[in-house]
Length: 413
Image (cartoon, rainbow, N blue to C red; front, top):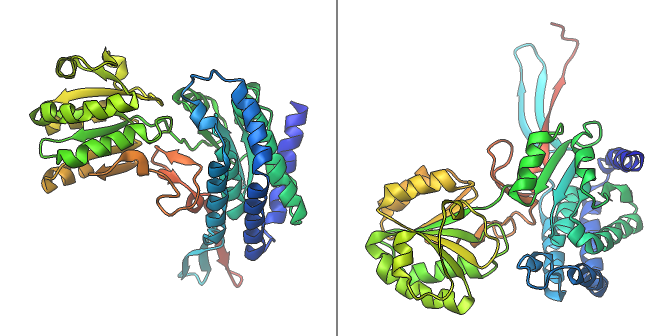
């Protein structure tokens, strides 16, 4: 406890110096970090291989843990994009003179110290560090034990760059990977200003229910695609396949496909061969199960399979009797992450967009686009599914708070 308190205190103290650093200097530091990342790719891969060697080779979540040269270069490019983004702090948000003569301003200011608790996604270590530095925040990171070697190497590299560039390396702090640290972080109201859990639904609920530090959730993604009766099936099949197959272990992958009964037969006939090629297991409701008879990886769905985040090549399919049933199903089972409708009926599409309560709603597109970088926000800390402060891709623009400033000439009240 004492050693962790000491680490938290050092990081909290480090934020004071960051406010005096020029915008250009912060950009230079991030560019130096991107270069160092590219130059030290093999070192990171060696550490990552040690983490992977401890995993079950058949675990589909290994894809989330994996680093390779291309992924490292993608992270480096993402950091360069963050460097090019506008400094979100110090912006004049409001200005006016009050009737009493006081000059009032509202400006954007850093949150302070951002605590992040996350699972086997080593890219998150770099994403959060870069975003926090760009927004003049410090960060305290608690990664998964599955990625312990990778995260240790990554943070050592980040701190080396900070030191070389003349910044306090304590601006980025990696805490031990053991679970007990989470409880200490949740009680660290003196040193951590906001806590962001990113990972399983169980982790997020635990932090939300127990933290004394304010929490911003980056929620689990139970994502739906509704293939409506007026869907163009030539569009629908590749959209659904992309949403499930392109990267099944991420939160914006589709988990449940709702198919209007009017197009169920032709749609499933077209979808099944593509899912067979990809090795997708299907958990089908009674009607879909009957239509998919003979599909090699077919299961009868239970109630628990709807509202389940699979994070693998598994998918639930339900046949619905029209728009209202689809909307009701999504309302019951959605985690309010990303939802999509495939339809050529403009009125129906607009009703779906209006009625579905989610951070991101699509028409005629894959849910896989829910991503801060894709949205032009740079990297992201996660996808927020709550409604206060941030919703959707939680990126640079939301890593700030507000400060009111009043300048007077002797006014009293």
